[in-house]
Length: 95
Image (spheres, rainbow, N blue to C red):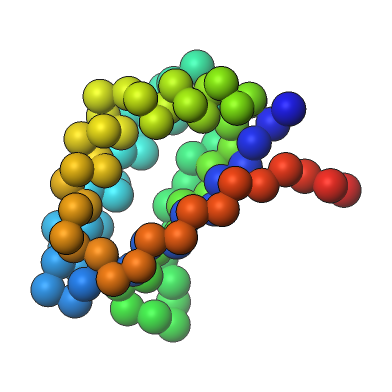
């Protein structure tokens, strides 16, 4: 079953540039992973420092493997202490 992820990231004002850099750095290696169908980063037009990832993974296993990769682990560690908010929603398509 395909899994979709919507992750909302809100950077602390003083870390906006570092968070932006970390977000951009994780995109290409993630897109190259087996099972990655879509991996897009969006910036909120109305709220400064707010970003949204939209991801599609071929399966739960593909998503789990993504979360274990070196580049994702490095990414997650680089965000520690720099966020106001992190909300991750795992979704399945109904229609």
